[in-house]
Image (cartoon, rainbow, N blue to C red; front, side, top):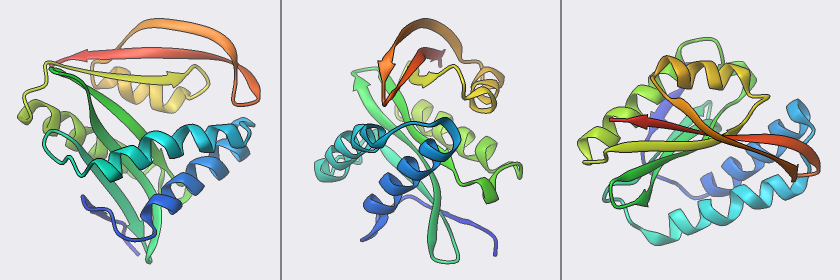
Length: 160
């Protein structure tokens, strides 16, 4: 079944998105359950805010199951932050990530943002390659122990 993309959160989506992050990042990168909590806090705040002006989430669903998402949230007045970009393994390699990035960048432009920022870590090579193709540039990095591992977090920025 082809995935569908929707921009409204439905009952159960919050938990499924958090779970998907927790399970996939544990399986693929060895992160512990504190990463799930890291996702849960801000994602819950986003949902509770009800603020859809200049913020949006795209939920990817297949056969009634959440299999991915991406979001744009307000970081500062003219700065958007790309967050929670994730696709389940069975949805990867089909152009869906590229499509979601296009939606997020276009939404940011139309919302009047001048810049998009994002944080990732250096082992997410496929995602980083996609960010670079869209024109994001690495502006900083920091090494530290987080989510049960030693990681190098990287900040990327795109001027719109």
